[in-house]
Length: 105
Image 1 (spheres, one colour):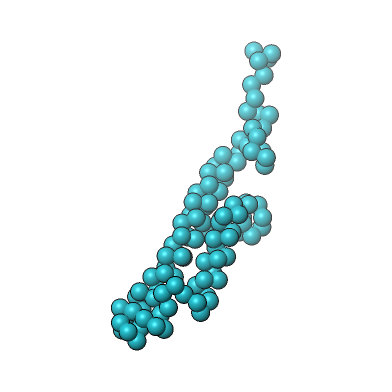
Image 2 (image 1 turned 45 degrees about the vertical axis):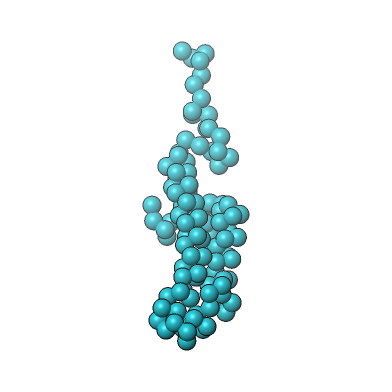
């Protein structure tokens, strides 16, 4: 299934993200957009040239990678719910159609 369908489901609140995914995504966005870095590009580039830029961007890429990894894991959970959704109710419990009535046999 596509990322568009997944994100649409999240924004329509049809799929609830785990709090860990929300927090990590928000922290990652703030970290990447903020001027504060663990490895600041502005200090490393004058010292090491282009290698300093690569080092300065490495921490940003690591934070983005962690957030993307959690989103990918949650997307796989959502896809499994979509496949299994026809046999489960919204609460996650089996529907009545999954229960075998032994009296009728």
